Length: 253
Image 1 (cartoon, rainbow, N blue to C red):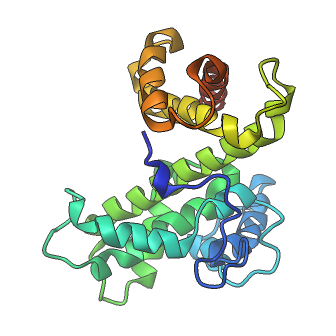
Image 2 (image 1 turned 180 degrees about the vertical axis):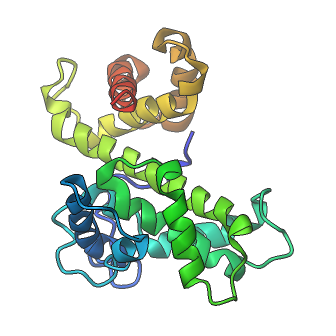
């Protein structure tokens, strides 16, 4: 299951330095990238990712499209996350510094944001990412055959965080319309239950076990992590199941 401290879906993603909501570069620029991507959807040939990712920094229309991916990806947080965990990546050369892989991580999360609206898989864009990496690499970074693992790691983390962000937004807007919703509880009371459900689905999806088989484990997770949150399992379990079902449907799209 994704570490909850790595992603705060209720946040407006303020810039850690200025505190301004959505002020980080990816959040303010992804709109232009997605506008460029929209051209490919109506028949244009996709150009180098440099034309897409290059538009990420400094655009003034970033809030128009690609918002959830941008809001879920804060470059300052991503840089700190990978700097801390870099030495634990078994696919990378332990003797190489974080700085040697920094370009790879940056390309990974920026590229996910740029392509998010197209629902593009990593495998589909990897050739473009390789070309863009080679274009940016001034010799201070590792070669592509080493860098590609870090690129994919950063892409997959951005994809996961985008998914969790969208899930939180959906339930924040819709929890009151659910039959089990109690007006004496706020969304913040239900939020841990929804998160247990949709994060649980991500964790257990590959087992192909139905919800009823996994529910006891989800209950243990919920009570261990949120037992004092205000919602007992009897009140939370319906939201947990809904969170799971929402994630299952999204993965089938």
